Image 1 (tube, rainbow, N blue to C red):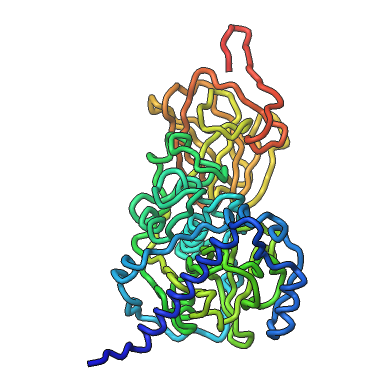
Image 2 (image 1 turned 90 degrees about the vertical axis):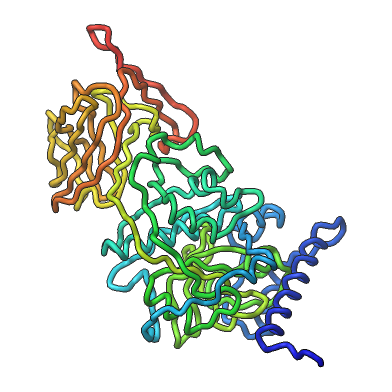
Length: 457
C-alpha cells in the first residue's frame, strides 16, 4: 500500500526543506570568493518587482558585515526530533478579536521602550523579558511605566543561551516561570556572556517578576486568527521569524520578503495587528534608530512561508509582580555597598506620582508625596532625606546612624503604594563617578569623605 502524506505533513516537509536550503546558503556565504549579500539597489528592485509595501534604505544595521549582523539575531529553535514532542496549539478559550489592536495605545501604553541587544545573539532574552514586562503592566493596570527587567540575568544565569550561539525562547520562558527576573539595575546589560556572579548579590533575595505559566499559541503552523485572538486575550506575545538579507534595509512600511539570502532566526515581541492593512506590529531589539522607531510591520502573508513569521509564539499566563526597589550608589550605580550619609538611588516602578527636586536645606523627608524609610540590621527605622523623586528613580541620603549590614528600604508614593528592596550598608563605601554618568564608563573621580573625627564615608 502506498502511503499518501497528509496536507500538514507535506507542509512540514516543505518547511524543513526550506530550512535546510537556507542553512546551505548560510554555509556558502562563508566560503571565500562568494558574496551573497543583497545590496540596497537589489532590494529596492525586488520591492518594485514584487509590489511589496515597504521602503528600503540604509539603516543602523545595513552596513554591518554579515558575520557581525548575525550576532544581532540569535534564535535557536527546537531540533527536528524535539519538535515532534512539542504539544500542538493549545485549546485556549479565546474571544473574537477586533479588527485592529495596538498595545501601545490600548487604553494606555502597555509596551515598554525599545531596547538594544547590541552585538550579542540575545534576541531570545529581549523578546521574553519584553513579554514579561508588558504582561506585568497589563496585570497591574499601570500603562506607561518603564518596567526595565534584567535581560543580562537571562544571558548570564539562565542557561537558556549565550551571545555566541544564541538561545531558546522556551528555555528562557521556563526561567521566567521558575526563577523570574529582577530589575535592570541588579545587572545592567553588557552585550556579553558575562558572569552570574557579577550581578548584585541581593537579586536572588528580592522578590522577582515571574510568570505563572506559558503556553504555545502556535508552534510551526500559526494562523492569523490564532495570533490575533491570543494577542487580544493575553497581551504582547514573544514570537519568532526567519531573517533574510533584505530585512536589514527595512525603514518603514509593511515588510514582506523580496530577495536575499537566509541569515538566521530572530525572536521579537508581537504587539499589535491591523486587518485593513493586513499586517502585524512588532517590537524589535535593535534600538530606536532602526525601522519605525524600533518597530516594524509585517504582512499577514508572511506566515507559513520562508519567513515563517509567528512560529513558536508564546503566551504568558499569570504574573507574580512584586513592587521592587533596587538601591545602588548614586555615584557609580554599583550595588557593592552604601554608607551612612552617602547618596543612594532607588530604581523601580511607581516610586513617585510626579517628578520633584529638593530646593531647600535641610533636605525634606517627604518630596512630591514620596517618602523613603531605611530599616537597618538592628531593626531601627529612620526617614531618609530626599534629593529627587520621579516615577522610576528616587535619590536619597542613607540616614546618619544607620547600622552596617543588610537594611530594608521602603519607598512609598503619594498614593500609598510601597516598593521595597534591600541595601547593603557598610562603614565605608567610596563613590566612583564616571565621565558618561551611567556608571559603566571611564572613571572621572573617586570621592572619599573624611570627617573631623577621622571616620570615612
